Length: 261
Image (tube, rainbow, N blue to C red; front, side, top):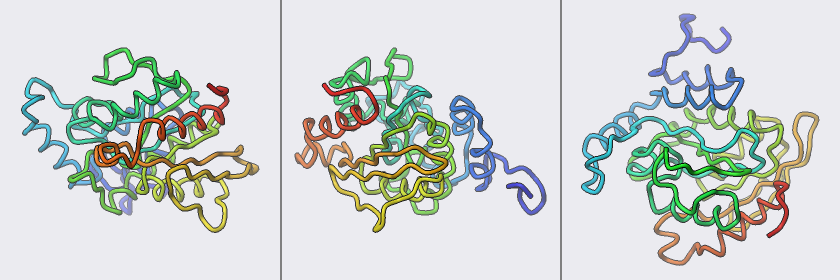
């Protein structure tokens, strides 16, 4: 049936099979990003992102919330991909840009700017002129989840988008930086399915983790780096400091072909 349902019908945006059918057919990141924003495959996430947009926070009453899946952000020739968890309800779900409009994003963009990978130290909204150099930001789940906790089913529904994105980046992709254990567990099967060979035993998540996935007939060598997620809980408690995150990103920058600072 070539990805179509039992009836032979092409899955629509509300169908669970929408990502699995459409994502692998995308020939460019622009096409993928446009399709991601149409996805309604997870009813709980659709309801939450729209409910949050309707209620709003007092500080954002004048905002017209994005309230759709948030596509990846960054150039198609990026050699480094940074993979988070999911958009924040009043961050990416409000602004329409990955890691934009919340404290975690502020922390991440400040680190990227320190290394010359972001043109500005903060990301406020989708039209603020920010540009990334050599790095693309994405996540295993593209909709804001309640309590920042996607279900395994929602993660798996969304997996084809991440797989297609990494595949489209793969000609130049040299490094994947994963922020947090959820992202780490989500990325490993995607990389294996995409043709990279994972070390055995499978690498465990830790801050500063570094695994090398050797080149295959289909893929060039890939470096997998781990960092604690720049959530408020981690940064406020000092579990993740700015120097710690900058060190991981500096390694990614160097391995990605941008030299050492």
